Each structure stands twice: as structure tokens, then as C-alpha cells.
Length: 263
Image (cartoon, rainbow, N blue to C red; front, side, top):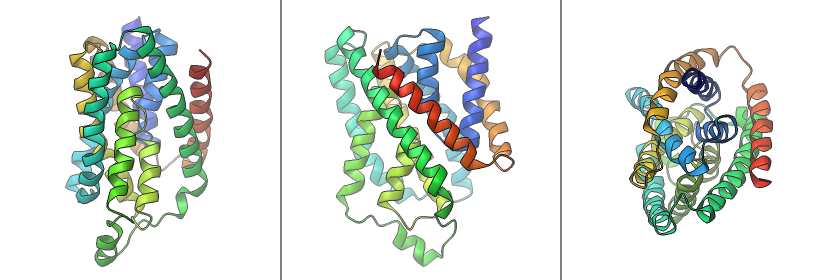
């Protein structure tokens, strides 16, 4: 019965990710903790690889459509991946299964969910004002950040947050991209967010796996449900008002974040 429940959970999260673009970490990790009683360190490690595999297909599809701004992806990855490796080393020293490490993870996850809720709500209110298409000359200019160090700094911050909580590469990542690259068309913002999340979550997830923080059987069941869920959600996105979905989702994430902080 639990196997079917995990497959169903993967399908629901995949459906929502397909409709909203919000990363699966902000949904799957609290779901595993609260609904299935999974330990925080195990839920986070498993969800990181869940996010990596589910977003990998999206990246390949967007790359074929030439939507991925690879310069932006490289700049963010240059900050996020080293930060993830350092965070993994610190976790190894602390033992992720220890009470102290799990408390840090739970608090980080709670804060990350609240930030994601705020970012999701902001996108629900202001997201439609972002340009969707610009000329090639404008695109070249749009890929230049206000300062070369900003992608590295924001990327490092997201790398730490994602490694500790599995949350941050979705709505928070999009919000950071909107700040750093305000002239970038929305489809390319989303493509960049999904593309740079793949190596980050893969590195962080494999790092957690080396620490024994991944349940491979559970991961397989979640992926069985998520892949068709994402396929269906990407086709429903045009039929359901985006702002309504994001507004409701922000309330759900805020509730989960507050609940984690009060554990």
C-alpha cells in the first residue's frame, strides 16, 4: 500500500511541477517527512536525486529548442557546485543522521520553504509582466549580469541551501535569475533555472548518497509516478490559470515551512 502511495505522491508532485515550474524539493521533501514519516536527512538526500532525474528530461527538451542560456547556467554553477561540495564535506564531519545535523536541516528546510512561498506568491502577482521574447542583440545583452560576482555569490547561497534542504533551485532560483538578469525573457529564465538545477542537485544528491542519505527503492517509486505526472502537468498548464495555482501553492509552502520551524 505504501508503494502505491509513493508512486501517487511522485505523480502529484510531478503534475504540480509541470504546471507551475516550482522545484519538486519544496513539495516532495515536506511530503516525505510529514506524510510518510521519513527522517529529514533521508528525505532530503532522496529528493535531491528525484529532482535531478526529473529535471534532466526537461533540460534536454529545452536545449533542443535552443532555449537554455548556457552562459547564465555556467555562471551560476560556478558558485553553486563548489558551495554544495563544501556543504557536503561539513555534513560528513557532522554526521547527517545526528540530532544536531537533522535540526539544522529541518530549520534550513523551514526557512527555504518560507522563502519559496514568498517567491512563488511574487511570481503569481508579477510574473506576467516579464517579457517573453526579445531580439538576438537584446538577448546577448540580457545575459550579462550587473556585476560578474553576483551570479557566483547567489549561486553559492543556493548551493548551500539546496544541499542542506533540497529546496531553493526552483522558485528561489527563478527569483534570483529575475534579479540578476531582469531583461531575460521568461522562457529562458525558466530554462536556465531547470538546467543549472540538474548538475547542482545531482552533485548534492550523489554526495548525500555517499553519506547513506538516499533511499534508492523509494526514489525509484517516486520516479515511476513523477515522469508521467510532469508530462501531464506540462499539457495542463495552458488550461489552468497560472496565478491561481501559484497563489494556492505559496500558501501550502508557507504552512509546511512554519510547521517545520515549530517542530
